[in-house]
Image (spheres, one colour):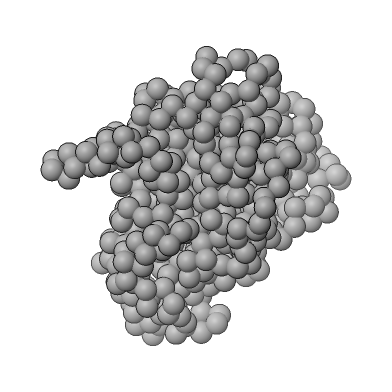
Length: 519
């Protein structure tokens, strides 16, 4: 396929939240934008008419000032709200001896905590009060038009001014430190925020407060998962004249004198000119596409590396077999070392319902994933009695094992493994899934990162700028501690840097925001 245009202002690689948000903002600001999927896959695939997911997704940024600012600039605040459904209760926590629900309504939540925790409710109330205080301060700071994490002297000065009121809180241990190490409420908060974050190490207290608040106040479900968010942003990019080629991949970044000059898209005969390249991968992967480029000096001491991975499993069962009291979002803690984050999607017209479970694993090797299905199912069946007798289909896109079909079988296949629940499974070769969006081989799991040389008080990872002039990263490695909000902030920062290179477009943007402020 050959591009209609041979030159773009900006080429965006990837279809993650940060990449598509940056592309939509720049297209709105009259930059000519090309988006290349770079291996992106839709979240859904299917087997025999049953929908399965390769990613668990709940949007945690609907209440973020960064997302509100994006929607206002795109003039889509009302239109976007119609795409999502608020989650209530926001979260259900299940352990062997406790069950409590985190409601967005403070009165209902207080009653729930007093019922379940009794004497510990004062500490929990103090944590929630502290979380609300942090929310007010952080919302005011994050609503500022600044680059995060800051790069040059002027950006650092702007950030210091914007975050002056919350600077002390960003370095404090937080009220969660007052709980006992094994307190069930503390464990629930720690694991909830761990699943919501892309930082695979101890989170700063400000990130814990921010993420927990986002999981409660900003949680919303989308019928098609993250595809709904991607489709919304792609529509905005195209509406403002941008080109989107999600099935394509950039093969090489063309550069000269240490700066971007264009890209070569796989399958194109000629290169596509561009002044800027944005990618939602880490900086090392982006620079690897610029063959022959070697930076004259190391411009950052930050090193970001994968250290943990998200293993996802889909289980389809009759809707009647799933307890009606199961919330759409839950945290199941059977083994404290490996809780599950479980999403229960709405019942399908055919009477089935899909459960999507996510576990965090330390390795991405086949040996490490060899028993993950059994371990995940053990937790699901412990908390959902009799579900093992009614399961229809089970699969994970990550472990490379055959899909398990429990329908119309009479004998247990020994290759399934020693399942305690006497499940009867027909093994379905993964080649049958390719026609409906699946893959024959195991797909890479989404990583979480460790950061050496933290920036921005432990919230920041890689800088937005890379050593290659005109190349930026806008993915989950920039502000990994903040999850979805971090991706939005990195996208806003990159769009701001690019916009400031053209005075006429920067002036147009100021006039746009002046009109918005007036209205």
